[in-house]
Image 1 (cartoon, helix red, strand yellow):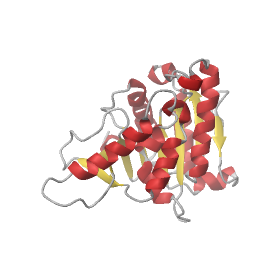
Image 2 (cartoon, one colour):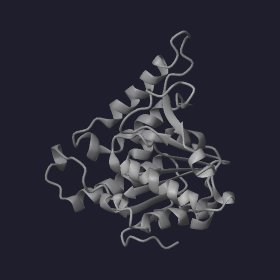
Image 3 (cartoon, one colour):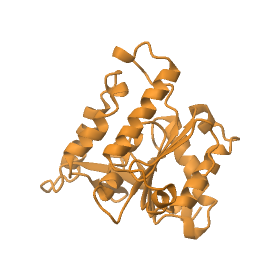
Length: 255
């Protein structure tokens, strides 16, 4: 597999041969930045964790150079932050027992440049090699324009594939802006109550963001718990943590 960016990396946490790690993938997440996958796609991580029949793989599209920074990271250059964030993402792939972690290393500007085909071509290669049953990405109402750009590039790549390579489901999930505003009939609730310790561990790995000025760990866990409590007004809670998604599958099956 030949990816476009010179700094792109394919990491297999358990050291399996790449062809095996690719072919065993059943769940795939495509996120813009380091930590986006752990925030939005925990349903897939949980479904595959310690499950020999299901494997989760992740694609981190950008290099993470533009993140805010303070504390011990206050004087880090963009290049130093890129190295730290890549290391954090690979740590998360080990803890979450991912099958493959792709680091595509694009600047955000490349994702928002509609004339640049390279991100789409990279994603097509990954989709053809993994043939996942379920894909998670950013929702199209996300507040962050790079997140929306990644989702659009993924949809474009999927539309260019033959039907046999398309997933059964494509979900847009929550990072910058939650999906509580959707009607209950339209939102897809993912029960992620299990392994709360694993959730916390995965989110806590990204110290450059947490100590660097953004408590994504507390905010993400709090949002999941709030969703669980406020989901149904006339019944007792059936879950302690929920993530909401929107079903984007019609955008690739009926474009």
